[in-house]
Length: 367
Ligand SMILES: *Cc1c(COP(=O)(O)O)cnc(C)c1O
Image (cartoon, rainbow, N blue to C red; front, side):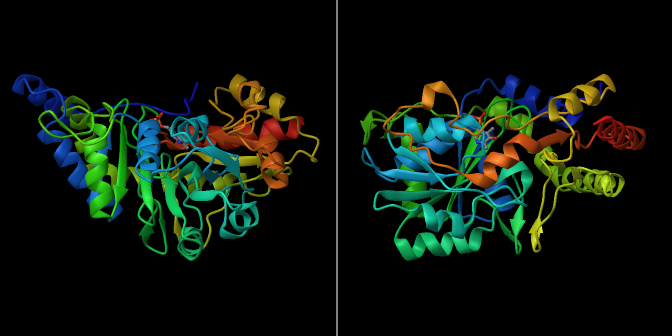
């Protein structure tokens, strides 16, 4: 089976992890600080604050906005469940705006339509490795006096007109095992705002400014030096990794163009896609049954996945809650029935890329 993700570390990671082990300082320390500095430089923000996962990054980003019960966070219905869970954990109400047909992200136009008197935060998700059209979203937030939090868990280093996703507002990132950069579990918050950065650093460490000096009821959201040691060498190699993902995506798109019923992913003008996922659409009116299509790919040894099989709120545990406002989202409702993600990771061989293309063609031909 050609897996959809491969987690593989080099000797640089092994050496740095060993160094940390032998130093005896395995909690948050100097290696986390190095990671923060390197990551702020990748995203182009003044600050980067490391936390223990991408979900807590989102929760912390919203907690420092001083939201009150009933305040609404407006996000995408087409995202991983962590986005919604973080809004609820931060004590806010989740509302949703429809997505764009081609990049699968919310837009300034869809967000505008979904604003209410209670909206306090815009929370676009940069899905699959491609940034949302973020400049107009940031402009909308400024005009309306709203905060902007960007869920960038899948899009480390993606840019719009050269500006990184996660640098328009408060950026949140994940370093879970399957993400483009990983610490096993880990997260980061990026911001240019000195005051927010300061509050986030205090919040992640039990609300403690100096020893036993507590300013807020905080959390333990700390990352460890052992985890940070895993990712520093990956950051050095990241430009090459992204280039390989881009080359793989280009090969797949070339091979898949012209297959009846299959639409390869699109990269919007001015955007750098970092290909966390390579996601095709299987046209639901073409007669191809998506479930059978994916089963055929699996039988051909292609580890295809569906991200995500349902809209984020479409589960019993979210229905009927006062803090989850569910509407209708025609584009997202169609897209969620049609997406299939194919392997695009940097370890794919030329033969494997050819095999993926051939398997998609034969799966599509079977209907
Ligand atoms: C992975 C992910 C998260 C959560 O990150 P964790 O590190 O797993 O907590 C949040 N949002 C999106 C869109 C993700 O893909």
